[in-house]
Image 1 (spheres, one colour):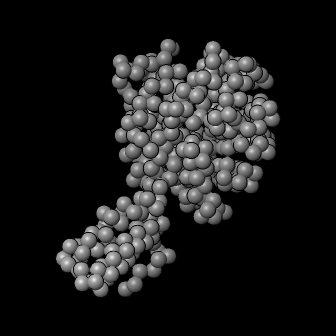
Image 2 (cartoon, one colour; image 1 turned 45 degrees about the horizontal axis):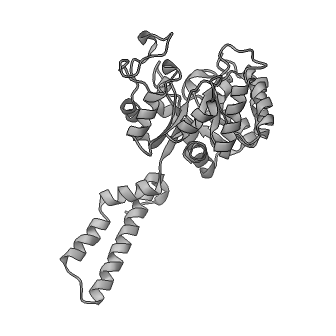
Image 3 (cartoon, helix red, strand yellow; image 1 turned 180 degrees about the horizontal axis):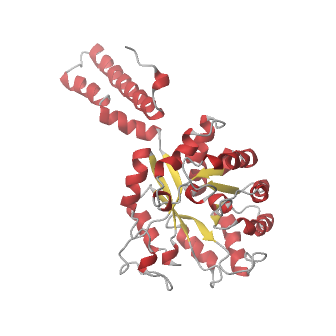
Length: 341
């Protein structure tokens, strides 16, 4: 019975196309050699090998680079090699361990092949564990570091970390007044350097901090900006239209992006997270797919009764207003353009 290609997954289609391509190349070469009287057993074996399942999977991997999870934290229980920052205790590391290998067990079976690591607060300004993880897994991770914005020369530190694969810097109000939490010479140096080096200012904020970001975007229009977790709209269980509109307002700044992430923490906080769909639709209309990116915020998406798959499924399967091109931007290309260039 012939196989209907409409019933095949995108991965299966890519794999089968790769098989046909490999076979056509090999048999075409075989035919040419046969015409020249050069056919032998080795040529036959070469044709078969070109269309082997292993070769097909390899070619499919090249054709389909996989999804990108744009927001994940990792840490290790080895606090001797990687000590915790002052004020943190081992008991606060929950789960006690979330290493790259533990992450891969969740994401790789679902086709997620690249990840943006976010410096974990446990380590303060010591980015070594994140950087070592990136070095140990080349072509898998990008990184968002945390540095002292009020240090002597934050721009120099940004440039040093860029050479090590960092493409963004996490900033948040800490204990500063919300109407001036982005003030200061060091913060402006970071935004200026971000524009010059194409490195993103990545904001962990609540909705009430969004207006100050709007002001900075006006002052530094060429600086890439990323708003984590929808600006945490709905973190108290209620998605307020005024908060959504503050987030929508930032779309007029051409280099501003939003992470569609941390579904476990917003709105009803329950899979399949359909209550977030209207907000996603509003952001899609405002930003377009090229400035929205999906992420999980693991490990928090895989604890407390939550799982990895429903986060991916919300974007991949449950938004009927997305085109295939839109999904590709949300699940891969936007994060790729911001964090893997």
